[in-house]
Length: 193
Image (tube, rainbow, N blue to C red):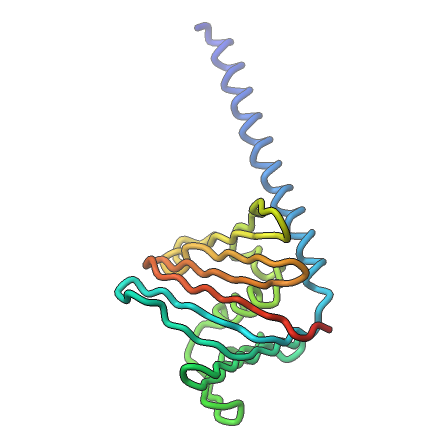
């Protein structure tokens, strides 16, 4: 093969590679913009949740259920009612708090990043999540599904991926952990504003 032929093929390959990267970035941006505008319309989301936590060393999943209240200005209150009552409050500015009731909450030593991820996932606030995750739309018959994979390798030690799905709002969340465990959360929204 002649040198000029090799250069032409190499140049074509490089051009195709850059076009592919550019198109993928445009697709991710349009997906993010599409859902971000849909989710941002809600300032309050209230409802009930059911959670299954699959831990690799246990045969059966751990089940919990309760209620949640998200207010864009106040953050999220996640109140587990069964099997053990517990309340977690997450605010963007103050972090993560936990306790038996809202009155007993104490700051949990955790990274502010955990609170931002949790709030972003539950509220569907993709503008925060797109900084930390690659966001891809997954085809399904009805509604929508997004797959979030961590951008930073240090985060992928803990989070393998997060799958969000729903119709008007987030209805299901599956967190796949780096160690093989997973958490499935279904949300039944009772009030939107």
